[in-house]
Image 1 (cartoon, rainbow, N blue to C red):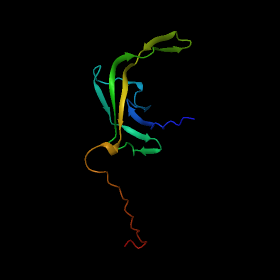
Image 2: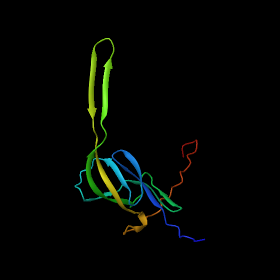
Image 3: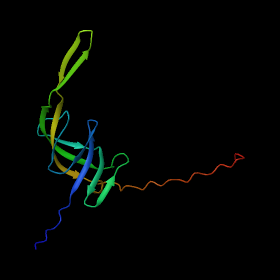
Image 4: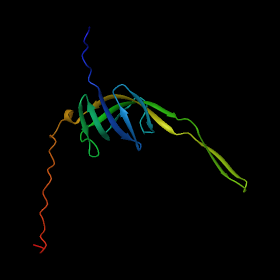
Length: 137
């Protein structure tokens, strides 16, 4: 029986355009329209969670120093949505349509906070609250 080395599975949950996406390197995703040209790289810094194997880093609300680097593959339009407004007994009918623009991204790599140069992250220590006695002193 052949034993294969386990490949580290890294993924991140990012937020862009008001939506959250679970991404892995090499994945293609369609996000809300971004102002980037085709072939340019994009740094998405709103990283909510990074998981590398069994190590999981959860942000509060984002992971400091983490980012996802992606390459733009151009823009496109989504599927057409039909909006039909109707009111009975008053002869009111209105039909409109909508096609949402999106940007297609290919995820190149996920950079964790430990790979960022600069000062190390410091621990936040909570201070104990002093109790106020009933007499006010």
